[in-house]
Amino acid sequence: MWKPFEPGSSPVDWCEGNYNISPSIAEFTNTLSNVVFLLLPPILMHLFKDYGRFVNPGIHVIWFLLMIVGISSAYFHATLSLIGQLLDELAILWVYMAGLCMFFPRRYFPKVFQNNRKLFSMFITFPTLIATGLALVHPAVNAFALMSLGIPAFGFLIIELKRTKSIRVYRLGLRCGAVWILAVMCWLNDRMFCDMWLNFNFPYFHALWHLLIFIASYTAAVLFAYFSVKEEKPQQTPILKYWPRDDFELGIPYVTIRSYIKFDTNSNI
Picture 1 (tube, rainbow, N blue to C red):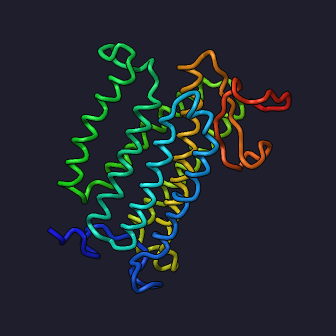
Picture 2 (tube, rainbow, N blue to C red):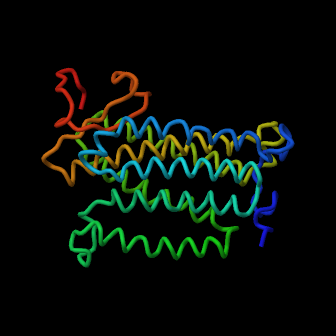
């Protein structure tokens, strides 16, 4: 029963050499790159405090689950254990499903849910539990299965961007899509073309994947949080802002509500 906890028990091994830098950490760079999952979510929790208070406190669940993804991924790459792999993949599955429950547009709800988000969320939880069980049975195919989840999310992002009238939101959406595509390319290169990149002495595409997919994931959550207010809270006006400077669009994006901030005539909605 302790075999899944043993180092190297996972059938998955990434391109980075094992124990090359530290005798106690299998994939040092892949492990270290997860630090971004731990540093940014607390900042996002602070930036979204008004959103969580006045719109949907569930937004903080997304940031918390992203931290769980980072911890699980760091443990997996440090040990290459089967239990680490499963924790990593299941954390990704649940953060995706949490976002689906929270942000899936009501206009696409099947009639059986009667526009009830709680009922929809309960329905989504059931297949997520089944997928969790299947992930434990066939861990070798989990990574490829999870990669496919980004495709419908990307599709819905395109649909919502076509509906928005905010140029600032549209630009952020384009950057989010571009980063997601770069992240997927890094993942595929590390998984499928490892030998070629080893010849160039660059086995670090999976570490880049961690950085890029985090940026794409939290940015997508910010965008869908904005779209959610537009659709479900028509009496409120969501404002896309950036920290630490609102005029620097490569900063950290977040959403606040006009009803609960001081009006700024120079604010770019």
